Image (cartoon, rainbow, N blue to C red; front, side, top):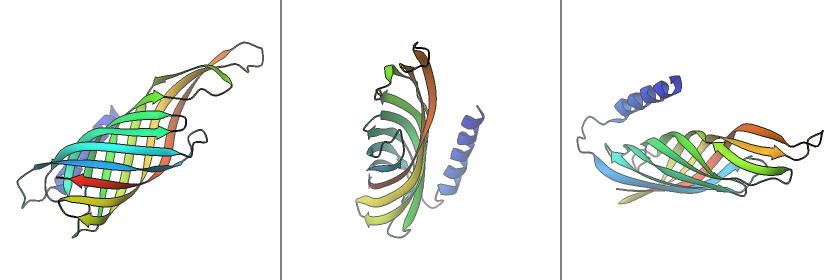
Length: 188
């Protein structure tokens, strides 16, 4: 509850900071990103993400959006649902930022050789702050991103290599942390 209250307070603060007093017309926009994650998730080095967001832009750079993010790796697949608060870079303001937060839904995991049964028991929080640098600005904008991503999940499995010969059920709560590098295309 404290986390939810803090996120709501942060959202209200960023909305009031990001609004441009001279612009009164909000407009629809779409944000689509793809990139790679650099980090360690059970020795996973090949992690790719695709993100699609749709929202309202309050001026040329500030907006709020919601959407889905597909995270695909050799061992795991996730589908976080998220809300994004973003100040997009433009030709005038070369740098921007965004703050994504939501809930991570695990889709699939890979059973290791020592596990006799494997399942995801539940997802967890999703958190992704980024900074962005302007590449192109026109009817659509293109920019590079670098950021930090953390998402949580819980997995359960039965360990076949227990000391007494019996299988042992193990539950792991995992928070995966990554450096992200990507390209974003924003259309409005």
